[in-house]
Length: 333
Ligand SMILES: NC(=O)c1ccc[n+]([C@@H]2O[C@H](COP(=O)([O-])OP(=O)(O)OC[C@H]3O[C@@H](n4cnc5c(N)ncnc54)[C@H](OP(=O)(O)O)[C@@H]3O)[C@@H](O)[C@H]2O)c1
Image 1 (cartoon, protein in one colour):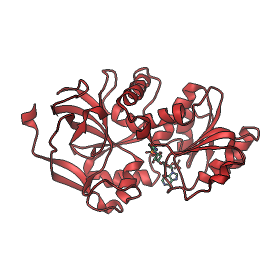
Image 2 (cartoon, protein in one colour):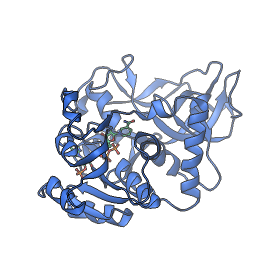
Image 3 (cartoon, rainbow, N blue to C red):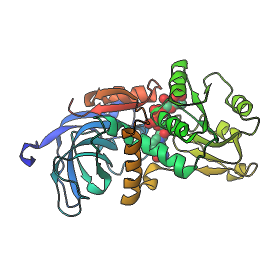
Image 4 (cartoon, rainbow, N blue to C red):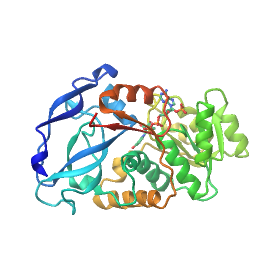
């Protein structure tokens, strides 16, 4: 199989940070070599995540430039290095989470890859990894949600939002979702949200307090950031948890921790990678995620598959709030 690997490939790189114009689709990027402990994966589908836009704009600094964006993909192992490969071999269909996914080929540490079970259809692993694992770790570890809890999920029809709503529904929580359009409201309700607030024109605080008899919600999952942080703090219940896990509307400005004392609120700013940092943690959560998928318990909504050459359109749609569910890239196009 190794002989059919080309010397160069299609990939999207950034040489500097900025707007959509910094995304360069190239056709002559060297295919990386593998070292011990690595596998070379021919990527079939690459996931687009909001975090990719942060690396593009420079909100999160890339480790080096030029830089290949993208953090998750599914594909086939086409070459292996030596050493511990966690049982992976050429021909295996794998899901991986690391760096350099906006490319046809990626050299990945085998510790960050895992075989995809038979029952998981093409596209679904790449469409589920980061957003599904984020939702799963948030409801388990950031705030362990229990049956009957009242919780608030912002951007409930987004990629991570739809996962959160479905997992919370499976737990038996009462989930209030915020969305910006009636179409998104319908999707979030179908996914299992029990109540919806359209935060583009409805008063979130008033509605949440009404629904919860003035108590507020025991947990808020807020990936919107700057524009929702204050209302999230206002509607979290006494001794509740505010999980601020993203910046879709911009980063939350510096914050005085004294504001937490009025209701003894727990505030977390978690990242997925710190929940799946060890191989055991990675395997544990990925296997659970695959279990939800093969058990038919989760509907993985794919907004669209974009040719890699149209990555700027994918970023524009995601940042422009035009999407619901997951965006994928086809690296071969
Ligand atoms: N901490 C972690 O490890 C981790 C991991 C994965 C994701 N995240 C975070 O989770 C959030 C969601 O990520 P995602 O990839 O699943 O994206 P997404 O939710 O599919 O898209 C973002 C959504 O945010 C809402 N939004 C509200 N204000 C916005 C604004 N000013 N600009 C753009 N969007 C706005 C939009 O929904 P409405 O139109 O309904 O408002 C939009 O569809 C992001 O903040 C991301 O960074 C964090």
